[in-house]
Length: 117
Image (cartoon, rainbow, N blue to C red; front, side, top):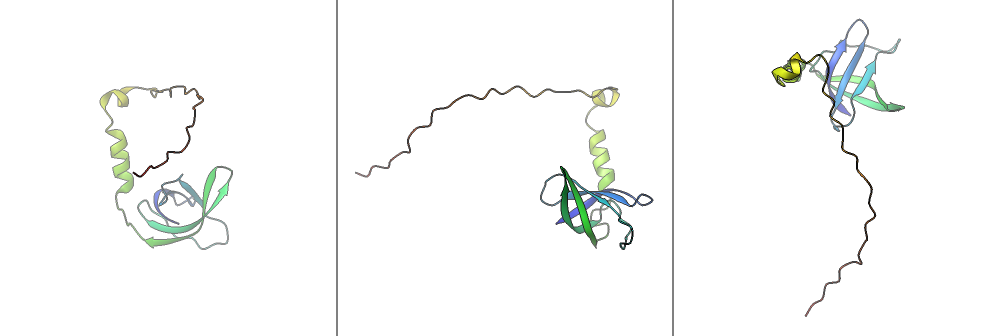
């Protein structure tokens, strides 16, 4: 899989990766004994995915292009910060409940027949 580093911490050797399949983010942790490259936000990487419960774990990471998207983290922060003055000043997040959906039984009709005449 291919992705972009969104966040990394060199001392902890950890990173969060956006995946090209638009699925959940992947988490990378450097394992002892494996080669490690410094990862920076914006780096394009190729990796394998394994699942640990509901969490995607990135393994066998290789940097394809350093700083393929320079400033990505800053642009994402700026976009998140420009949602409006009311949201920035509010100390508590606004929770919007999803409407309850009641499953209803539907009658399925017979397939349509094409009549030629």
